[in-house]
Image (cartoon, rainbow, N blue to C red; front, side):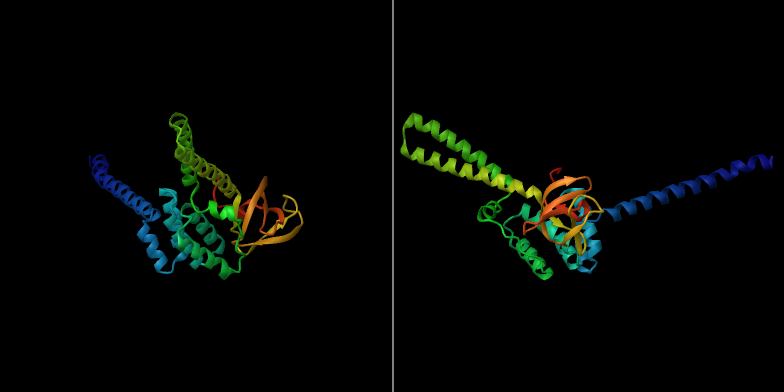
Length: 258
């Protein structure tokens, strides 16, 4: 009788141990989840403590969870810059500049990082500089509104024969055409990329690891993507030189897939 009853007397203790194990695992999983999902304040605290790599990882996690924004990209660029990661800092500032093209702090930090690293300042034609005053979304909105206004003005002039309406319609049409042109210019930014390979990346004459390398591109340098073959990208630097680099060595500022 005693031996037969023994398993029944041990059952509560085993159940308690199992329940305690489940609770412990649940709390540990929750703690890991909270640790892997930092808040913006926690990321800023890591940066203020000089833990720049951890801060950058925290900002990246926040971006994957909530999406990119100009302030988040700006702080990410600061963390990378203070941690000595020139390529990633330039990339983050460039991405922030796309979302907030007239922000003076973003422009100043981007220029400072480039100057400190001895990187060439990209020289852009006047029309590209003008197009970069606003985001592609803003230019598209301008184009839709002004072209609609121009069409409505032309319809109104046929009814009221007003010279003033003709001038308004012509001005709206001009702004609309300029807005469309600006969106076309900014579409080229989809080819704009930054070298993120630490130190430098070899530029090869063909898209193969065994191909000869005639030159290199430096970390943080601006390039344009003009082709793709397997794991290689064909790029053009600011001096017009072209060649093939590993796709992991450069990152586009704006991804076509996004």
